[in-house]
Length: 160
Ligand SMILES: [Zn+2]
Image 1 (cartoon, rainbow, N blue to C red):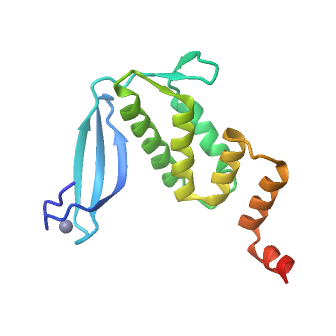
Image 2: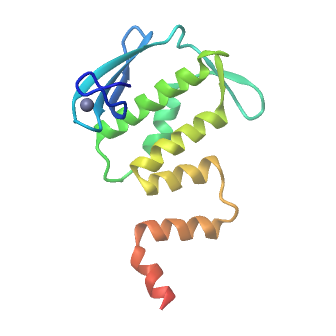
């Protein structure tokens, strides 16, 4: 989105939320070039959509369900409540945009979306979530990943 201050088109979204009426998304943006902050609005015609489960059944999109999964993955992690809240808002917003056209979205797409967002916020939470949604090929691989995240020194010692 073009910066109204300097005209640069690179910006980052610093906050994004669905407005109370549920028909628009308000995004707070910051220009990468000059740091100017501005707001954009994107309209959603219909925010209601269904989630296609792995067995093909449909159920209404449930923000609380995603929130529970995200909070479980982030349990005891050094991440602020505000970061968690805006992460869940982003997931909901992007799922709504992806599901807008067909009024449905597959559970796998939502899972990938959650993973992508968690990956940028906290690596341990990412691994925890991935272990539930994607299943590691073997448990040892999962444990090694967790150890690498929580204690990088262990790995160095093993190598020497
Ligand atoms: Zn600018």
